[in-house]
Image (cartoon, rainbow, N blue to C red; front, side, top):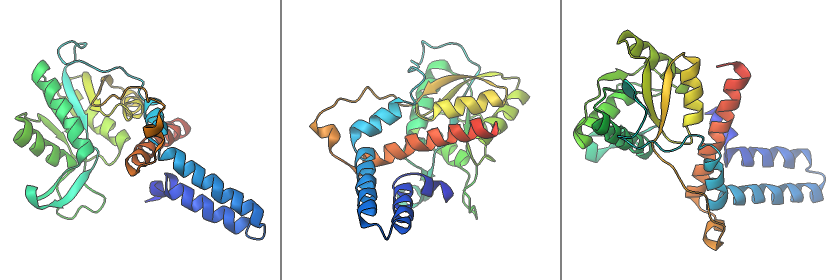
Length: 245
């Protein structure tokens, strides 16, 4: 819940309210604050800025299946879930997880390596399946690929790395392809290195440089979402660096 208020639009709204309270007796100042907040919200909502932020996290080049360095297994990290979807009889993976699974399946077919899916239970689990279970089911039913291992205890990226490394070491595996979104890979690679495991980055997405034109300066909800993803990753890497995770 806390992270939702650290990212836009929550952070902008909270910051705006706080500054308006501080400067409530100085109308000229809080009018400037309102304009500043609106400007930040506009910029973060434009495709040009959001793509630039995502590009700032694309540290690793695309990996072409069949033409990549050798590894011993594939690890694909979960993103999120869609709850109670009637067409799938309950919970299923969300669009981000599906993008990662699609590339992991393509990579598995090209390499014929065993595959590990990583993702634990939701915060309020009840009887809901883990993300690893949902990912394994999606791989089998929709892509015809079997998940060899399920790491279903992790609740964040650091735990993805720690618990996956333990499972793979038990199987005498020490080098893997790490599949997640390009913008998530810098933090994921930090986590796997901290767990003492060798990973080859395998981005499931890669976007070209943004073009400065009228259409990329028109704000959209989709662009704001991408900006939030990027800011979340920069905040997360700052946390890792600060606390040594």
